[in-house]
Image (cartoon, rainbow, N blue to C red; front, side):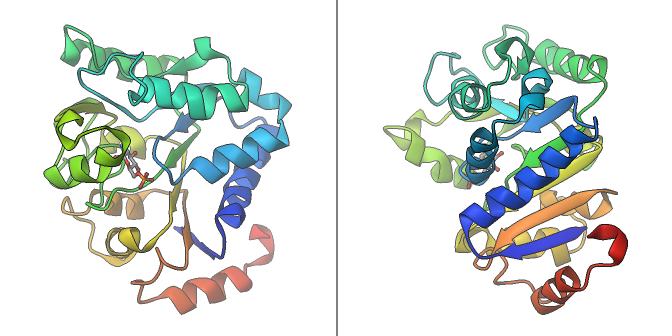
Length: 256
Ligand code: GLP
């Protein structure tokens, strides 16, 4: 796992955008996994500013969606991805996929989503944020480490965290469809971003805790190509923070 602890949100955006730009320029970015939430916003901002030509040919798969919100609801992840990712990055909307949380057959929609990811050749790079519960996507604690796209029940804590996007906390849906931890682990590369003190505990669990269903993000310790990009606050509970900075300052030649 590669760990970068950076000063500003703009630094974080540039660091992740460099990775994505590099993969595009080497022809290694056909399918980008995109995430909602505030964490990846600096990355989208930076990518939009760079106006990368190669992006228009990239297909995208979102991590998750609320159950029961129409795609036209402004807080459905269909709408959020369209507003924050598809439009500013100039992606082709036909190539941007989000799980269908309004399907009559939700299980069928999940299975179909997995098939679509496979049909597109799998995800080359999955962007991720992390919830205060340690969830990635919407894989709440006790999610099976090998889970696939499926229906999940949101924890009260996650519903509370996400209530800021709705007019009342009761409006936050109780269920969602999310790529599973196994689905996320199948991405060839993952880049997780976390900012702020509220993420420090989850980040400590992800990087230094045991691999455990109680901190679903910790499964990324088993990923062969994972990068975690943090600000100082999100890194504030890491026992090894000084070492991670030392490693970043003394990268071996082949990683520079
Ligand atoms: C939601 C999303 C996650 C995201 C998390 C954190 O629950 N399903 O994918 O990582 O929120 O969001 P934020 O970055 O806004 O804190």
